[in-house]
Length: 160
Length: 109
Image (cartoon, rainbow over all chains, first blue to last red; front, side):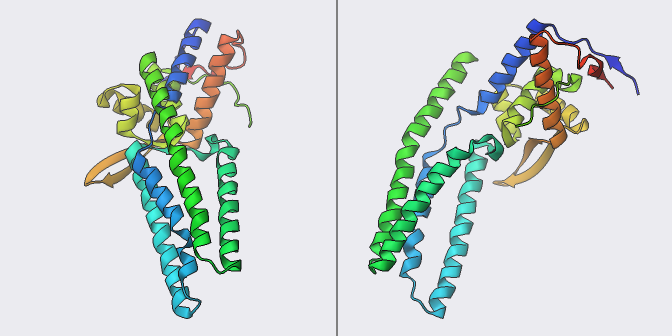
């Protein structure tokens, strides 16, 4: 096979190439997540305690299994539609662990306490209080997140 | 995280290919149209460079149908990610004034 020697770039050319790399890496940072995504996720979280309303009978158990299957399917559809809408899939390794761990642990704690209280006091609505709090947090979090993405989008356009 | 070994890669170094790899390294996969829009290149130019990267084993393509239209999703292979990260490390070394460790690898087959 023919081999062609390619001269190494000068330090100035290498620095230019690195700047292009950084610009390309940031090209997707300005992607503004659509509103419906947060609304869909908040709704999915809010309805989780519905499982508390199921009767403790074989029929209730079957209903719970079907419900969880439907919920998981809708969740997968929402994520899939979101990825098709924005045009890329996130690389999880690039996300700092605490970006997922802190909200995940916090939500799990709130949900766990709410469900435990709902079971202890036999008040089903306490479960919805917990899930509603998390759903509200998702909707509130959407505002600064979308705003920050718009700012990054503007800075990307400005840099181009 | 392990620091990649500096390794200048002429296949990646072409400006558009370097940008394609940089964008794909930031994600798991990206749709062809999204890459085209974000990098502001024509479909034909992107196709040409993606074909080179696919031939080198650095990029893989996956076809998916959505709304009856076929879309192509691009992602870096493990070899592509390693080569890209090594190339960026080599560029950083050049900027830092160190060109010794990877001069021999600058050969295009």
